[in-house]
Image (cartoon, rainbow, N blue to C red):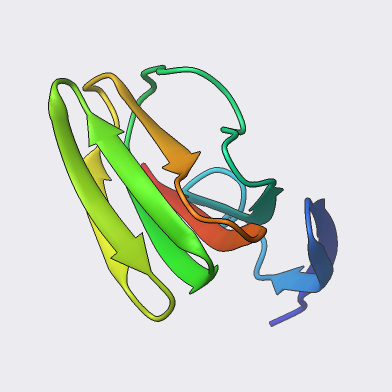
Length: 100
């Protein structure tokens, strides 16, 4: 099997088998400053996971709120309105994985 290198935000090297990425799974690393969010509530196809690398997050899914810290994960139905907010005093870093 030949692996191909693709670009993904925040990832130095991303190797994948043909046909797997980005067709079935997408991932990137996001950094968000304290008191900020990377974007507003949104929806899209698939299942999305937020894996916290550092910082303190509030994951928002419709009207529900969940706290996450380093080495914690939330997996959500991405067809529901969702977002993530840095509730901490330091930069927040997390991995986003979207499977379709």
